[in-house]
Image (cartoon, rainbow, N blue to C red):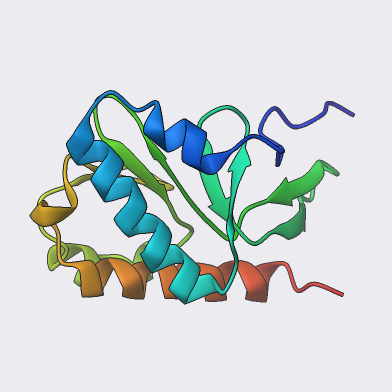
Length: 140
């Protein structure tokens, strides 16, 4: 079985954020840490070289592939800060219609700057995402 590329590391979250070129992205990263820490109750950890994750869960797909992933995570990337989430389509429409200025894919919200979005809606998305993951992959 192939090993997951993105695993929790011992790298410093602070060192990673301080190496981000944009001061605005660094400030947004520190704000996202506060938000995700308050929602999850977990300290931030590096996952791979560029993802900041909070908490962990173990998943196992029907294919047999399994691994660990963070309950909540983000990455301050050059083009946009990526916030990872898990929500079924039917739970997205109302939340995302009120989020603000962003782009979205199946499991990522791309945010240019936190000032462009409604933080309370983001918190709700993250909380529901964690709930979905915990229901889908209950931990023993």
